[in-house]
Length: 210
Image (cartoon, rainbow, N blue to C red; front, side, top):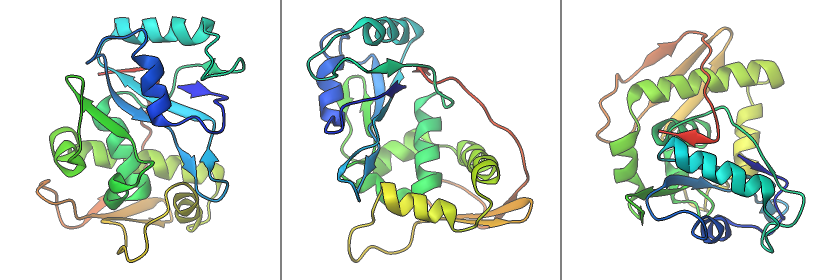
């Protein structure tokens, strides 16, 4: 996870930097969250690496780097979510499957090739179990930060605006006391039509590897 990024830094900028010290195929997920209201990034970036050695190489590079695209205040640290599937599942649970088409959505790579069909990428890498874990994580975070049922929707609207004419998210999220009801409608991912999730805790590491 990278912090204190320049405000105009983009996912394409991050890929340009990664290509300077890593060969193709060493990372499969790149995400620079964007704030639509301020028209800038959130000074954060997430990269999932395909092997521990690449993650270590990136950590050392970003820790010591003085790069013209990055500035001099950048910080690198571990994050909470590990793995391509887990990161995609969390993004879907938080913002909805349709936001995978957003210009500021995560970028996915397979064997060094950028994937353009995000629905197919989701089918390959996101299981129903990962979606359940992502919703558990969201519920825990919402309880700690803001018990309001509308807080997650407000956060979603701020970070990933839905284009005009878009329908409601394909994954609905509705907090209800100590339980969460989720109605996933992801095409071709075999899931029950209506599932009840109980409270749990799900953790991971964030200079990330599969």
